[in-house]
Image (cartoon, rainbow, N blue to C red):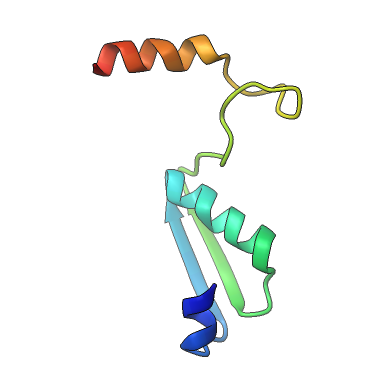
Length: 72
């Protein structure tokens, strides 16, 4: 947001792929659309994938534990 403001960008187009899509969504949620003309989300992953009380549609922690075990 500071860079966008410093460069005095107007009508910027924010593009995010995968987790970058979550970052685009987070940027707009935090800073609004005053300087944003368009947002492009390609295969976007939501900012929070973990199942919690606030995100009941998320994945259980065990799914992430299995991914970690496979990577390590």
